Amino acid sequence: MNQNEENEKSLMKEFVVEGAKKKVKRYLWVKILLPLLPVLLIIGGFLGLVAMSAVLSQTDSKSDNLSGEISQLGSDEIPKEYIEYYKGAEKEYGIPWNVIAAVHKVETNFGTIDPMVSSVGTVGHMQFMKQTWVGWSAPYPTINGLGDIAIPNADLMNPEIIARYGGYGVDANKDKKANPFNAHDAIFSAGNYLKANGAETDIRKAVFAYNHADWYVDKVLKIAESYVNAGSSGGGGKGDGTWKNPVRTPYQVSQERDSINIDSLIHGGIDLASTPVGSKPPIYCAKAGKVLVVGSNLGYEGNYVMVQHEGGFVTYYGHFDSVNVTQGQQVTNETVLGIMGQTGLATGVHLYFEVRQGGSSANSRINPRDVISF
Image 1 (tube, helix red, strand yellow):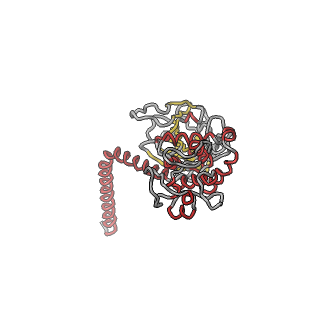
Image 2: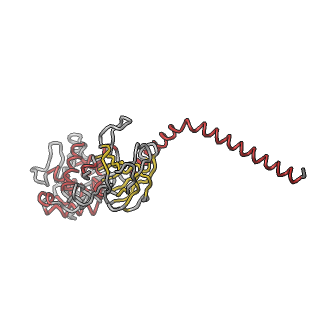
């Protein structure tokens, strides 16, 4: 054997040995990782949920999406002289005019109670505690410990004193007084207070700060919704032309919301299975909006898309075979989000569809049948 043949044989031997080593390494990794696969899927699913929650926490209940054209009920019920004040406050503070109007309605029925002073010391059109109006650091003696203070009206309405102590009273009509008994001043002050309490990102939280009761928040937001036309700002509702079924080929409802899953958990959305079984039709966006999340979570709904809509709505679409949109993309109810599939934990080809309103948590899920006829 000549020298070249010996060198070639040596190189071949090294190649075979290295290949064998790589096979052994791959075998060891598979043997180690395979038993851990279920754990890795669970961890991956958990991290996916955490990431999704982080994104949603930044966009939860966008208050600038609650406003809209005044409804017939709003026109009939709201005193016309106040509408320009509500809309002025919306422009100034970014708070939906109809939410401020609803607070006004609940607090004093648009200033028609007499006197506009409550038993606990709240005053004016929007029922502010005097200490909240002038500022909690103001050095006036308290009366009942709840924010009622012994303060001269001249000081209570003095914009300079309010600015000094960090109060929320506003001189909206520029008469050099911030008067809680003046509708213009009080309405702007309510907008100021709601904005300071985060209404631009979480309207429920801000209204709760106004009056610490869930029933109060529900009442205000329900009235606010009734004051705008369904569809003008995403008020939602069947037949208004803004909501459409995301599946527009033959399908069947294979599981309802609030039924029990095979894993004994509550089903948070509705399942729409294509017919014939196994076919993969396009999935449309149910309502115009902006793509919030495009993700893949094999431990849950597989390839999924979430869309933020006006009116504080979020829709969720799961189990896509493939996705056609990207995060941040503006979409309409004629946009194809992707193709129906079976990714994630799914026993067959179908769409998992959720609607959430007023928040991003599971508690914000509503029945999709409330806005779409399936």
